[in-house]
Image 1 (tube, rainbow, N blue to C red):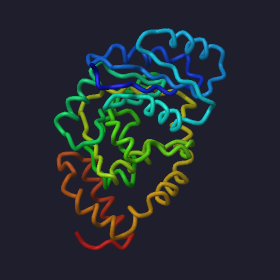
Image 2: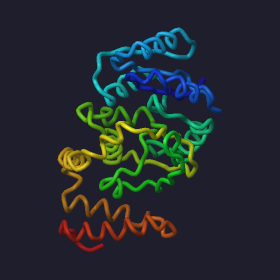
Image 3: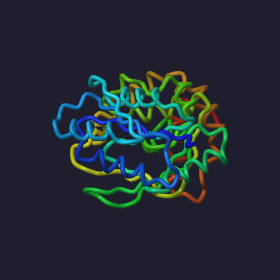
Image 4: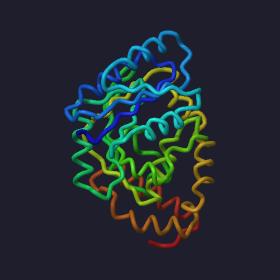
Length: 268
């Protein structure tokens, strides 16, 4: 019996939903169930797709009034009965080896709360984005983890899920910070197995526009982490985990030295 559930929130995304579902079904590590959360879709075409999926084996469609992406993800996690859950947006896809590689990574790192991979872009732009190895200190200053990861359900429960008031985006960034603060760190799988659709008008475009406001809000929500003393402790714990062969890591290290100076942090 599989120990993975796929959760796919959907709001008027009927044009891409079937592609997302198909990518889950194509996994070399099968899922126990696909939970599609209809977040109050109004498009007739999307509602038809959802109605058809509700009659398919291995798929459960949950319906709720529109409450936003984080609330839809939480509804899916709540419905899952497996040990691990993968949230997948309705316009994205998984490479067939995504779950198998992430499941292997979690098995090898039993203290990790989640596993994530590099990203392959498709749609209006193509290419590969190599994500950095997990570093909690870095994550406090910039979201470096994609929204899609294989997550231990107990980690999601420990932080009470995604904050449902983060409806303008970056709910995943806040979630990763909450997990890190609770001791659930991540592990990177260095293969581009998460396939992210790039298209004009996506939610990520809106998030970029309001990023300063979101960043300020995250610092307010997690103000205990951004105090000089706590930040210095986190920095000491994670400073040796930059990859010296990774130029981005060196850039990040210089950036954080500057941040330490401006926040009044002490020496290393």
